[in-house]
Length: 98
Ligand SMILES: [Zn+2]
Ligand SMILES: [Zn+2]
Image 1 (cartoon, rainbow, N blue to C red):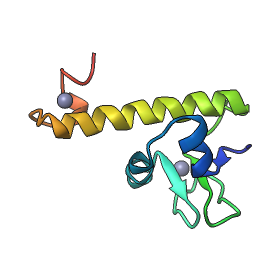
Image 2 (cartoon, rainbow, N blue to C red):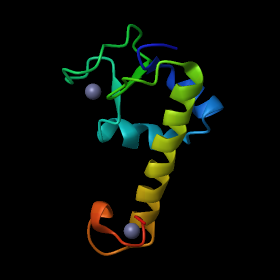
Image 3 (cartoon, rainbow, N blue to C red):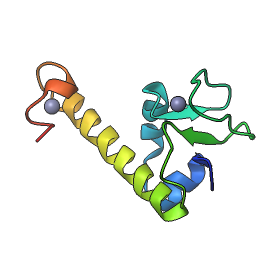
């Protein structure tokens, strides 16, 4: 695992990212699929791999897993924001941001 490229199955297994969050994170360009249009990130070599957007100083496996976990936490908070029907945008929500 380097250059921020990882196997999403590993993220699910190691960082405990629920599969339903994976697509959400891709949709928000937190993670990219192969063929992404982001000029700042490398392309994954394998079709199934993903790359962490804005991957700079996190060049070790442990740091990458921490990053995956924190991305996952944010996806979870966003999902709850919808589920609990909070008013307004997630970014402006006082219940979801402290
Ligand atoms: Zn990117
Ligand atoms: Zn909220």
